Each structure stands twice: as C-alpha cells, then as structure tokens.
Image (cartoon, rainbow, N blue to C red; front, side):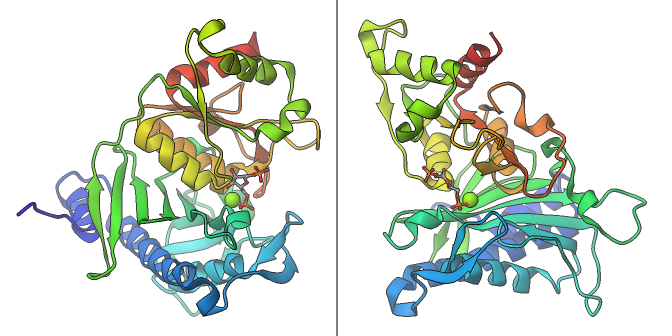
Length: 334
Ligand code: AHM
Ligand code: MG
C-alpha cells in the first residue's frame, strides 16, 4: 500500500526533521487548512446551503460582495483568532486590519487572505479558491498596526491557496518548494498528492482576458500578437489560450502543466497599477510560482521585491513559466 502523508504529518516533519517551520507557524497553517475545509463544505452545498448570490453590500474596493465572500471571510477569522499564533489579519473583504481581540493570546504572525478568489465564478459552479500569505510581525514593534503588514513578498514565511474545483486541493510553500494536498472527504484530511511541484520553463499556453486587448499598452499587445501569429510568426509555434477568471484555478493549471498568466495594467483605469491585489493575491502566488521554478513580475520588476505602501495596493501581474515571463518583462523594459 502506498504510504499517504497527511498535511499534519508533513508539517510535523518540516518542523522536526528539517527545522523549516516553528511550531506556531505549523499551527497557523493547520488552522487555515481547517478553515478551508469548512469553506469547501459551503461551496459544495451551493444552492442547497443558500450560499449563492450577492450579499447586498460592497467591499472596500467597491466590488459587490457575494454571500460566499462574506461567509469565507468569517470562517477564516473565527478559525484563526483564538489560537494564539496571530497578532492580526487582513483580508480583501475588510477595509482595515483585524487585530486579534484582547481576550485571546497574541502571537507573532500576520495573516492575509483573499477569502474567496474568483467571486464571479461562484454562482456558475466554476472553480474558486482561498489565497493566503503569512508574514511575521516586525521585531520590536509594540502592538500591531497596518504598517506592520507593509513588507515585501520576500518576507513571507508561508503562502498558499486552496482551490475548490472538481477536487479540493491545498497548495503550500514554506520556502522549501511547493507541495499539493488533496482533500480526502471520507477521512476529512488533506493528503499529500504532489511533492516537488515544478513549472516547465517553456510553454505554449497563455492566460489573459483578451477582451481587454484594446486597453493594453504596446509591449503587452506585441507579446500576445506574436503568440497569436503561431507557427508562421516570430515565435515559430502555435499557442493555446485558457482564461478561467479565477486566479487560483489559472495558477493551479500553471503549477500543474506550465503556462503564463497575465493581468496587466490597462487604460480602463490608468491610475490603478492593475486589477489584482499585491498583498493577498500577487505576493502569495509569486512565492508559490518562484518556489516551483517559475517567475513573477509586474511586467517590469520582481513582484516579491516590491515595497507595499497600502494594504489593498494593486499590481500588474505576469507569472508562470520562466522564459515567457522574462520575455514579457523584456518587452516592457526594452
Ligand atoms: P476577486 O478577488 O474579486 O474574485 O477578483 C480577482 C479575480 C481573479 O481571480 C481573476 O484572475 C480576475 O479577477 C478575473 O478578472 P476579469 O473578470 O476581469 O477577467
Ligand atoms: Mg481575488
């Protein structure tokens, strides 16, 4: 019989044998995984659980909140606030940071999340997910404030996502490669199903919302035009396209078989750097992708080296197979 390793076992081994993660971080990741299991249950119930549709409110980014956005946010906060491993949390669905209430012990970590990424796919039964990023509170700072969160992605202690699709899969990095765990519903536990995830350096598959093409800048348009020319053009090969409109699902495909994902700056809202959020979407995905041998830039510089200035800061995103990300970035710099 093949030996199956659970998430708990994997984390304990990381803690004990490899000294990669302190006990507090292990606990934190386990709690996030447990919250994801609860979110998966709500997602799976769908209309039967009366969780579909809009909640009748807007988040800080002016986006209409779905019922599941709010449910997932509450599940993550409730699960994480009492364990003693966190100082504060921040979420796409909350304007300010959520400081762990005084009645609970305070820990050293900061947790950021997009509770339900790909919200537009909730009601149509297409893959969605939870994205999370873990930072350590800067040493010597008394209390906790929003400024403590404004650290570059290189400082992340752990990052991951859980994709709710045909399978529920938790993908994780603690800075020692990328591992994938599939939820075993009968056992109720996450089981290691992919070790040493690697993104091929080359690809013939790109992911971008083509309907925005007329709003892109010239280097972005050049890259896609060349892909579309196929084997008769400068690239000398045919490309395939996928766009799920759930970053988690698109990144999951790229971690599985390669590809390049792009949500570039565009002229629709020229004052915004991009659509996606740096702290709880781009940074955790960049960490995973780099740990799997890929690359992640904002079309000009490495995403993980960007110094954030705001919690809900936006960023252009180009990530995935290394050689394609380098090409897109070179076109922008050139
Ligand atoms: P969300 O966090 O509100 O769900 O928005 C982020 C999502 C990404 O998952 C996805 O890549 C993108 O928005 C899709 O945007 P668009 O509908 O413009 O194609
Ligand atoms: Mg999102």
